Length: 113
Image (cartoon, rainbow, N blue to C red; front, side, top):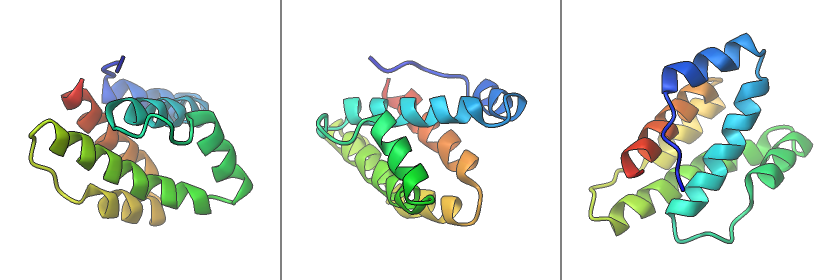
């Protein structure tokens, strides 16, 4: 089940907790995106986070792109027009605006919930 989250609260908690909440948010985004897409067997949120840490965020860039692809796939399966948001998430993460990418992903998941 996908939980609708208030994006402003998630961003505020990420700053107040010095990024600890953003780790939890990353894991939830991954698991919920896997739930809405056909790729239920993809990498879990915890494994994706560990791979991101071990590869010094190289996997995190791939993760951002792949999240966009999965969300677009889920939207097209439901008959909702989709755009190539994977590239936008990748660019945001690449230039240090990962929290904006998280917010956009959460917005799309809230619409799909």
